[in-house]
Length: 542
Image (cartoon, rainbow, N blue to C red; front, side):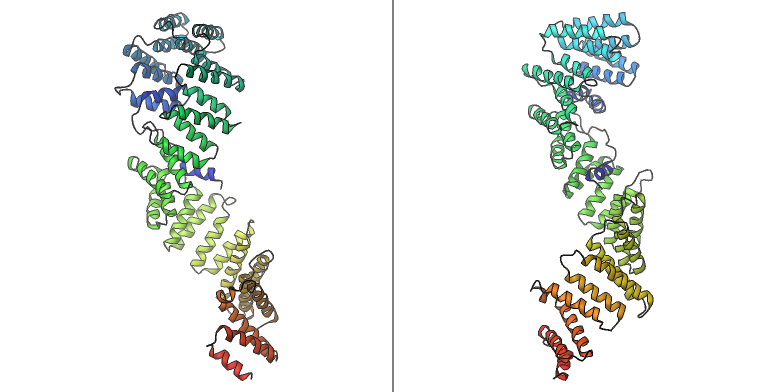
């Protein structure tokens, strides 16, 4: 499963819950950058802060209501904004937009005039009036939009940033290149005044994110350098890193953003996931537990606790987390949930339950979850159910994508099955022959052939019993030749050498070749000087 896909499954929905009250300006910035849900949360939570400009906050809350079709709520917010500060022209613009939307253009024009009269030198209010006409119907009121854009340009000597942002917004669906040019002008002219226009940076970046992600990210890095405490700047950069699969940088940026009081619980959830996939398990666990302290039933963070505790090999803790996770009857669980739980149960020596968890994971998507068949085989191996262990490992190999090591494992499964069957039975011979088939497949391309030949020799003995067949001797000769490529193997695999030499000595003795038999028995004695049975055999051969 691709990393991003798995990550998305782990995170699920991201809750929009602001974690602390911070500056209302973050809500304004989020609104202007089209991040409306976040804007609403922050504006509502900061409305009664002593530092909040209520006239401004009421205006943006009214704009949010307009977007949601809540005209009554919007009117109440704009009126509250007028009451908070009658000299703030924007709330008159909002009331004018309502009148225009209701078909009362004359009333709208009066309210727009009242707005403009609050500050006859402010081209930004002129831009707001043009936007109000565009919000209601950019085609029907195209002349009015153009009129106020021209008026704002003249008033500002072509330098009002909000005019350029509006023009970018109007152009972006038809010509992204033109829109980008407008946003860039908004950035330049804003900074000529010694200020920064964060929404222009964000909208500019968004235009390029799919076609030139490095450029898009670069603009947001620049914005963060100029507005290092802006929640919008911090969160947008973190999300762009995430969108472009730069997960290490995303985690680092989210870590910075977490220190901003206007971050969201959903951001903490994503941060926990990024830390987990960066293998920073204690840190990821800590974040997940912090979320759960405020939101005890958060299914996504219960998942992260299970995943992190499993990664940290706290199997009892992971099982406790798993029980809480799977107690959510309405939740959708992933194959990863069940495979992790299966791993936990396996380490707790509960293989029967582990099998059930793995089988559930496999059945969610058999085509994508083929590897789980090998895990199920391993559980049955622990249960000493050799028939089932072979069955599932064979299914895994038959499903494709098997490696040389998988062939080796399957051969071992057949070996164990053969040993469980009566000696000399056709079933035992069939199991051994199947094992030999997969050892031969592995031998075809294996670099380290010694262990494979050793396993093949064992399978031959499972099939043929005590008989030292020519095939067994040839296999042992091949094993020794492979092991001899590294002199250290004589000590490392001494038992394998001794078994091979003993069998080879016995074979040649039965063949009547005493010299050959003596040669191989002596090799056993060289490795094991105190081996009394071999001493006796050699003595008899003198």
